Picture 1 (cartoon, rainbow, N blue to C red):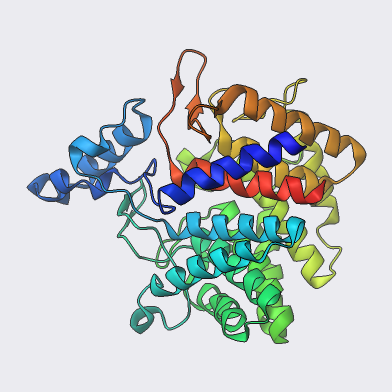
Picture 2: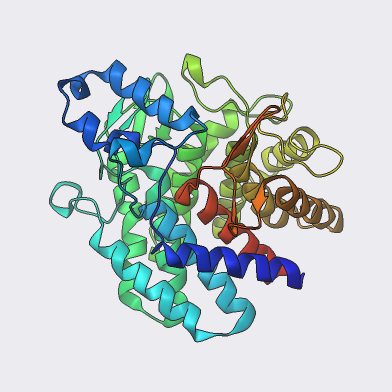
Length: 385
């Protein structure tokens, strides 16, 4: 236990040294070289460029003029981790540091003139197959994680302004992300897009239900439960979810499944509803039976171990301890932590690798995707033991 606490302290120190800024698997569109080219206007060039940056085991970002920057979601994760360290130790320095990061987050809100309510997006342009998202355009996942961080910090420090900002994000989700399309009702990943993605919709539902309870807004709670009901209806008989409704969303992976389960559990805890208990049980049983090897390695896909990714290991900690929590779940969680350290930790650099395939390891330092998740997961794990 002490070894994991020390490992995570060194990881935090390494991130402090960088000012919590860094590279991201999806930030190659921040390349000054590409942005100065007329090719930047072509969506297929943007998609290919972004995928090249994500998949290359060699980090070309310094050569291509991609700056290290803070990511709002990553900062939200670091705050959540700092709060876990505070709960474990009682050291107020963690609270002060979390407050400094929260103050930065408040300066990074998506344009209030356009969106009215508090919300956040990524610090880079993002090209997906279905849509293009400019830097700063808010999305459901970033907004939820930032809001959770601000709310928890506000609760611990009795800061009503932080709490009010965090709760206001539910108004953004409800008014700008609620979508009815193709017979489905869901919260979209970003405003104006009609792709139904389960983890984004369920996290939006969980957060809206939680906020609705705090605000005494029954209509917000009802909408959130209705949205969650849609994803539960889309759950397969074996308890699994594909990523989303589009043709290229037909994969089943571990950390998004974990997102779904954690979100449903949060909604259940917030509202007291037992409507989704069967879904939660089936989904969790599927998760435990399909996303881990016997030695605790967290698999990326239900039918494939590789690529090994710290995101999968980190989310496993939250899913096993928050959704599960039995002695058997805790035992599996212990194995998962040890396998993550054995397979992905770089002791000389005090951080984790991005991904490992059967043939090679991608050691690029990705702050939001890898280190923030690792720090938060290990801080949560340490606080639970």
